[in-house]
Image (tube, rainbow, N blue to C red; front, side, top):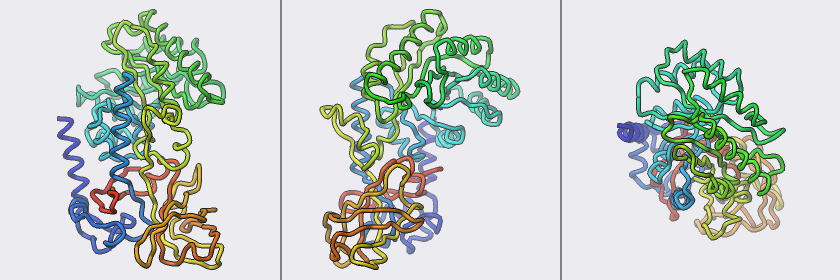
Length: 429
């Protein structure tokens, strides 16, 4: 049933009409469905796409999906990739096909998107205190006995608000929750001490609208993170789960959830989670990395754990933003027609990687080209030689931080190595 709902949702995406809402698509495709346009297998460079245009490498996406499936399986980890990275049901479907347990969300709106496409297991890595969202959640749980939902709790007030809202909604199933252990002073959400965690567990036990199923947190917020500090915090997380289990707080569960794991320290998570002792029920060791699906050419290229464990493989950057030279006012300066509305810039500026000649389509490395800044609709490019670029050339840009790349594009061409567009990835931000 769930698979049918997802398949139907994906068909609905393919049936959507192409029009002015979607940047960069060929003007002569107006009125076609997305599926019809994909079936034409147009070339990104020769068949009417306008610039700027964001392309997602079909080969790199497949490689990254397979690599993380292999890694998770090898290390005995369940995987709920964070969907806020891409907010793309087509990629969620691919992640599930590659063995994902479910999909992680950050806010209720994201969970609503997931449910509209039939996602049956959602881990929401935040506390929900919005009565309207809890009313919706109660309805989803009541309507679908196979729907599994887990979220954080990190405050007594949050528990009170959740209980009040769920009672008012007439909730028929308790909401599964995990206590969130914060990563330390100055970190983000989560309670700071084990004593506070025990207080939350007591409060959860005192209401029938919530059910404690485990412990979780986010090691990426450990202050001055390095292997020793991250591993020490993860061992606190595990020790807390062991203490809760010994105290009978997980009685009657058929599975205990212990979850961590962003995109920068999942190797340390795997190492420490391998140390989890036998508990009163099997442990769902849930990893939540999300940026891997597209990876990047900046932030995550530097931070990926695969830099530390090259024997496990390597992720491939899948994004390339193509923009054209629209102005060449001086021998040292060029301007491209892509800017802040098109490219991620919160962590790093785009990197010029390759130039495609506007005259004959030949490719050459973007040697001597440096993106020095972005305006709303322009990239500022410094050039070392007057012959490096001319108006009309296409420049392929590598991007940093996939989370702020996906959200600028509603429909992203999925492109094979030879430039053939095979599909279009729909996002919901």
